[in-house]
Image 1 (tube, rainbow, N blue to C red):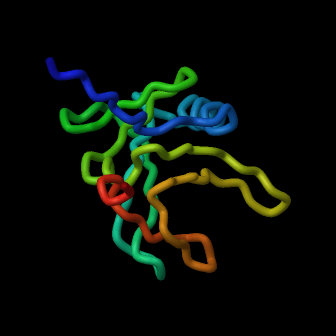
Image 2: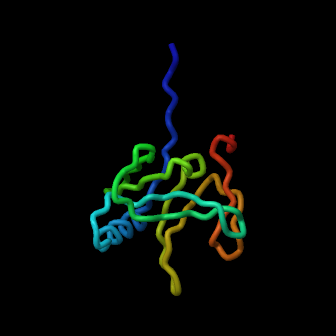
Length: 123
């Protein structure tokens, strides 16, 4: 008899990230169901994280519900984001979402882009 394989957790949120997303959603000015996270080609290291308001859940979205927040993962980004922890950092001169991603192999010096490998290659 085959045993069910555990599915890795797509993404976790820190308390700071969840609180910030709740605040952003409350001030969106229009009805949204969550935030959509993805990756796009660009930057000096090759890829950059993206975030945008999501007005609806698309059929192919991977839905993550954590700490009372809904995060929708763009289907093209799923393999690059498995196991990622999303945090929100506030420093003296900046505040931003930070992705602690086990699939990240390097980042550019300015911190705007990263190099990622698909999770399937991580083994």
